[in-house]
Length: 459
Ligand code: URP
Ligand code: ZN
Ligand code: ZN
Image (cartoon, rainbow, N blue to C red):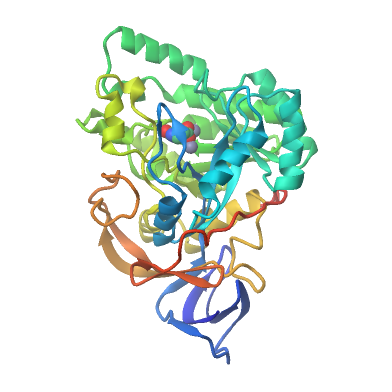
C-alpha cells in the first residue's frame, strides 16, 4: 500500500511547513513539496493540519477493578482512540499480589493480541515487589520491551506498595535503564478520610472528592520525587491534577532530577463543582477533579515544561456499573471514558483558545510520550523512516461531544455538550488508512504490540 498526503500543513514538535508526505508499506518514505510519486491512495490535505498520530500513555482497557471491568476492551477502545487521532495507547498490566509479572503479562496478551485495532504497549504495574519480582523486572526490560513500571501509592490491599518496596524497585529499574511511574496520592490518609466520611453517613459522590484533598497528592508527589532523588532513578507521575503536586515537581527540578509529569484532559477542562450534581458519579475518578486554580496551574505547567504529556486515564464504566456505588461513594468504580476526545479537546481548549502553541500540542499529545517511553523516532514524529502514523486534522471544523456520536462503550459522556473547534478527519496507522469519512477501515488484530526501548531522557 502507498499513500500520498498532498499539500497539508505538516506540524511536528519542532517544525511547521507545507509539504506532501509519501508512505510506502508501514513507513514514511518521502516528505517534500510537489512530490513526484504515484500512490495507490491520495489524500488531499490542503488547508488541513498533518500531524503525528497521537499517543495516549494512560489507558485501562478491559481492566478488572473495584469488582467489575472497565467497559472498553482492546478492540473497542483502540477503535475509539483512532476516531480521535490516537494511533497508539499504553495500557497497564496489573500484577496480582502473590503472583508473577510473567503471568500478568500472559493475561494482558490474551486481552490484546488479535483484538487491538490500534497499536499498543503496556506499562507493568508492580503491586508486590520481592526478590522474584526484581528478576522479572529485568526480563521485562531486556526481553519483552516493557521498560516502564507503574506503582500505586494508594489502593491499599489491592495495588499499593510501601515506600520500602518502592525504593527497592527504583534501584533495580534504574540499574537496567527503565522508568518508574506512579499514581501519587497518600493512600493511608485517603483511606482514613473515606472511613471517617462513611462513619458519618456522608456517602454521596462529593465525599469521594473531599476524601482526597490536594495535600494527599502534593505530599505523595514530593515523597516520590525524594525517593527518585535518593535512588537516582528516572520517574513519571501519572494523572497530575493540582497546583500543590506541581510545586513539588518544581522543587525536584531544582535538583536537576529526571522527573516527568502527565496530566489528563479532564484536569485541564473540568472541575470539582460536578460532584455536587445528582449524576456526580460520572466523574468519580482518582485523583478527583480539582479547582479552577489547579487548571490554571496545569496549563502554566505545560508551557513551563514541567508537565510534558497529556493523557486520558481512560477507564470507562457504564452508568449501570457506576450505580454499584449508588448508596456509597467508596463503591463507585473509579474512572471515566475519555480516550476518544483527547486530541480534539486539547486542540480546542489549548491551541484554539491561545493557551498552547501548535508545536506544543504535538509535543504533549504525541512526541514527548514517544521519547519518554522509548519509542522515538519510530513513533511520535513525521520523519523519513518513522512509522506512517499520521493524522489529517481540520482545525476549523466545529462539533459537539455527545454520547450519541462517540465510539466508546459508555452510555454517557463526561463532556456531553462540549463545543469543540478542530476535528480529526483522516487517520493513517502504519501506512493503512484507519479512519476516513467517519468510518474505521481497519479490522481487529491490525494493532501491533510495540516493543519499547530505554527512555530518551531529553524531551
Ligand atoms: O480513577 C481512576 N483513575 N481509575 C483508574 C485507575 C487509576 O488510578 O489510574
Ligand atoms: Zn491512578
Ligand atoms: Zn489510570
